[in-house]
Image 1 (tube, rainbow, N blue to C red):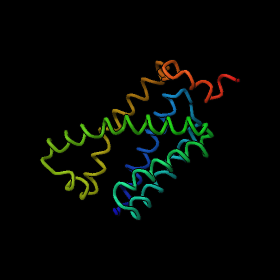
Image 2 (cartoon, one colour):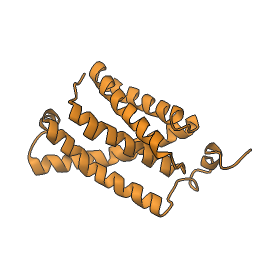
Image 3 (cartoon, rainbow, N blue to C red):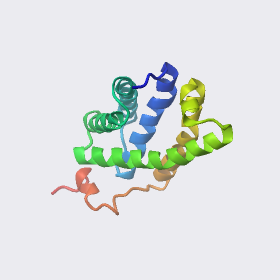
Image 4 (cartoon, rainbow, N blue to C red):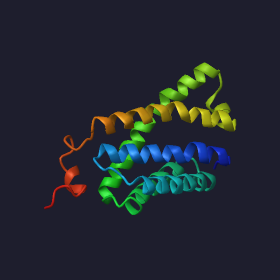
Length: 164
């Protein structure tokens, strides 16, 4: 169980949720309404705070994943399979970036992961290199209309672009 400071929620968890949801949806070919996206990110950030505060390590990841899927489905009105895929894709890319970024931050600062997480502002700073990379990926996907729709033939059907 973990208690996160308010600044980590506002400057870390909410922007992270926004980027993950947006990237996952873009990659499955969904262009979300920005107001709904921001609302879902705020709710997810708050939920993650309470999930981390009241559940054991490991279980919190499963609960965060489930709440992310449910928010994408309920707030952004994405087909449930699309919500699962977008949460998985966004989360997977985030994990692939998070590991190397944390190692880089640890090597630059000489601090352990525990030290980084214990220091509120350093913890927030550790989010931002990843946010920059995710933002660049999102920008490029939007600019060049990159989606996984051609690789995953069933996505247009899920997104309602093909009626059967």
